[in-house]
Image (cartoon, rainbow, N blue to C red; front, side):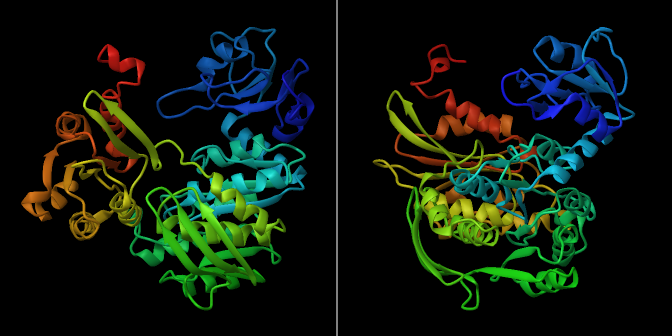
Length: 475
């Protein structure tokens, strides 16, 4: 065991209704034997293409404190420490429920069409100096990620931060009933996952499910500038919430932007947040980050923490992998800049990223190049929404556009011929053309929905880096 016990065997048994083999204590919880740490409780989940039970024995041999299983599989010995349950997935939910019930932390939940993970990470960064803070890892925002994140929350945490995502109506309702947040943030409502809804109002209704898990003393933090603000406010009030805090440029916003200064690699902000005037720097470029920061500070104030100290922390913000991460690629003839925004995309986040690319600095004779993959789950409006990106590409001074995927074909056709780099069936087919086109001095953005696999283009461009060991042998 590498630290204080997060869960004793008896606590896990009481929470899950399982049967113990042996006595043990766990310092963490894991569902992946590849990333498991010594002392973790390994939860063997069964998915559509894998079964964690097949790796339970490996996990125990790798140092797991115990394995939570609903069947004995090959590789598990009679003497291995186990918690045997009726269903490991249901037991993980029960463990998350027990973690929530024992916690005295102030819990903040984040949802919205865009900006959820970045906002969650900014909350974590700002709150960690003010108390023991637990936050979901990456985008663990679904039916297994949220209970796992709760189960991992330290028993003496001061703050807990959770991201709640959805593709369909009803999903957030289940998650918020589990988390029961004290403060909720809806970053905004935009046409993401529109293919699964009749209208954008349907998306708003699904996001507003977050209020169902909150009691009357809870606080909703809402975007005052969003077209569906009044709809969301009515939903919050109908759910019985007594506190609603708004953020944005609107003159009535409780967290109101006074002035912004947007630069290639950072953003300066002057705002009045619930009567407190704050001047701060965000170590991330883009107007979308300015809006995210207002929501973050408003929520932190609502949770009872120090907003001024939190604002100062935003100067230390760093991007996550695939979410605006920046690289300087050193080639034999010079360097070019690479912006890795390959993790996800929808029309709103795409426009925000193009604005960032438009402000990116260039080297001598450099060009701004956008490499774009399909934005998925947009339904019948997909072709129109893809083609509509032609305008912001030109408005932001993008010099060359490479596209891939059946939906991005509509954008390729809508572009002036001078901007067309190449179009390909998929990212693998496009990568070679991008590698051939990029030159020293360029600034290159790569973005698309996760299913578009734009990380393949990132990998191809990274192999050009002379500073990377793999560049020397061409791999």
